[in-house]
Amino acid sequence: MLFGKKKAPGKKTYDLACWKPVVRCSICTGEQAAGFKEKATGRFEEVMLIRGEGDMARFLREYGLKPEDVTKEY
Image 1 (cartoon, rainbow, N blue to C red):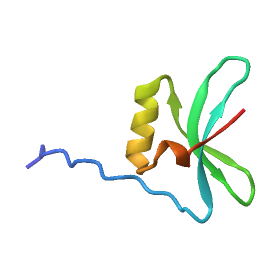
Image 2 (cartoon, rainbow, N blue to C red; image 1 turned 30 degrees about the horizontal axis):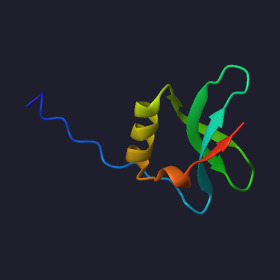
Image 3 (cartoon, helix red, strand yellow; image 1 turned 135 degrees about the vertical axis):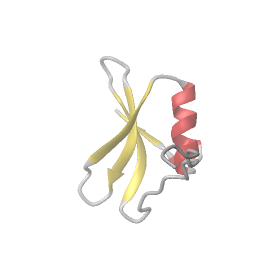
Image 4 (cartoon, helix red, strand yellow; image 1 turned 90 degrees about the vertical axis):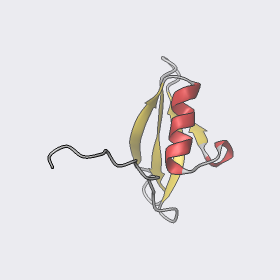
């Protein structure tokens, strides 16, 4: 069978010991990007662009996070 049912995507994971969830905000444009920052080096890995509350809710839901777990950086 070529076309089957699409599998429901599972929760995405990240390494809690090495990465922390961050929303990076631009002071000039107000653009927000959600992702993870490596604790050791400070390297930021962007996951998605946040354009509104719906995008932020999706980011939290996909990674099983609570709003208080995510920090904002400018």
